Image (tube, rainbow, N blue to C red):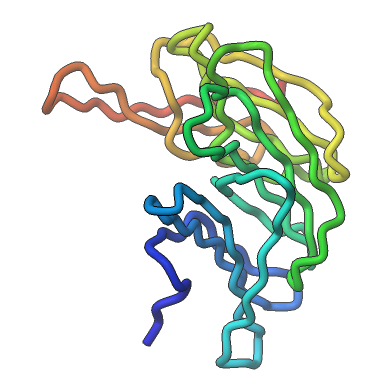
Length: 198
């Protein structure tokens, strides 16, 4: 019937691997049990049955965005421990489409609130993630991981635009960011930012 997952939840990302597998991330929530879990569902290229797997470390997390590198998948995720007052823990996950984990890296920024919500893969297979940090209010934060999860650099885009909505790589290897500014209850203004590769 097209419905995936067993609990109340939402899909947060979808990727297609080089082999043609489609992998969807579903974040399931159970507010009675106060539990949040990210699950993964794969539809093989020539199949019509979903294959289900989970990546379960010792903590809870929510996958925000995913991309494919060949037949491997990279994701950025946020800490989702129920009732946690820590809002600056981010994760980099790299795994095969069967759920085999090849990297699970924690990145904790030195700000009271920093969340990576979108990612892209560069031409050299680095992963650039975008998000927001509250201690530099109104600034967009970029963080670059290597393909194995090493942290390479962090950059703040000095704007008053707040959280970005989507991130793409431009033809000159710069970045294009879109989002919107809310200036009132019903007053939204969309924006477009173009950067160079640095």
